[in-house]
Image (tube, rainbow, N blue to C red; front, side, top):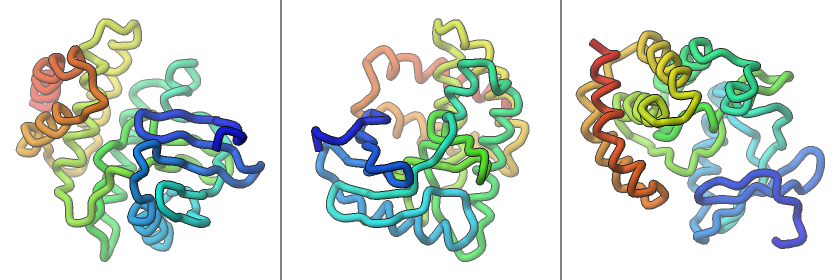
Length: 213
């Protein structure tokens, strides 16, 4: 693993370049990637924009290599505006929840998990937290809460996150407030969050309620 070039590093996994067409996503905790691969392959068959799965075994998932920046990077460089970004996240959630014959939720759909490709358009990555038979309202609430966490922070791009959150909430096709407490509990239990991030969840949830009114 150490001989491969790392091109991405998340809180739970590293992404290594195998060649110009393939990447290897390796879960550092040794988790099984085959369930995630099966979900992605089925969503691809339904026409939902996910990376093509090539192989999965144990903690390793080999996928199509996507060319393009993440939506988060595009926002930070000014190549994408907050309001269209919020609407894009809403559209991707609405499309996912409307797939016939499916009941899959992502539960971590935010700008860092959307790749803007020239050939395919926006593609949703990182399906490790996906659940089958999950509540779409929880999926919507998780995305809103993650944006709200940035909006209530001291980051210089907090105002943009608030504008993106407002656009997300306006674009969603169904309510999320009944599932907001469960989303907050789920986020608070995430071992990757710092104590400060957990402490900010109350203000983030309140912002979601205020902008949803």
